[in-house]
Image (cartoon, rainbow, N blue to C red):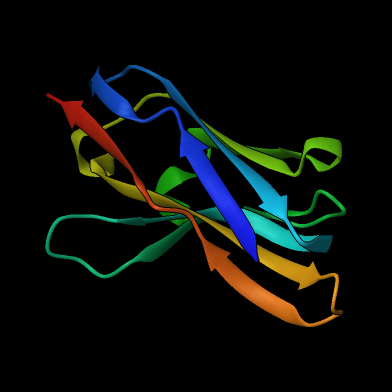
Length: 120
């Protein structure tokens, strides 16, 4: 079993910054991609940003140039630096990890979600 523990959400004014962290622990052989998704009120969950084990990144168009995803492979941790936040970034942010377990079986895991609220 693998656990993802998120931290760093909160309330911030428009134009401000927040940094999310997500640490993975448990029966991990390797972590392939890690990243962040979000679910805005009344919307479906959507991709925000992902990063592979080789540090290749992918971003939603709506966050390009404002958000930066990174990871520390030694710590099995992924980060999301969010700058120039807008009210429309308000959402529950979920960490995701594509994990190869010690059993060599590949699974997708999700964090519990962390609320980010951007006031205008």
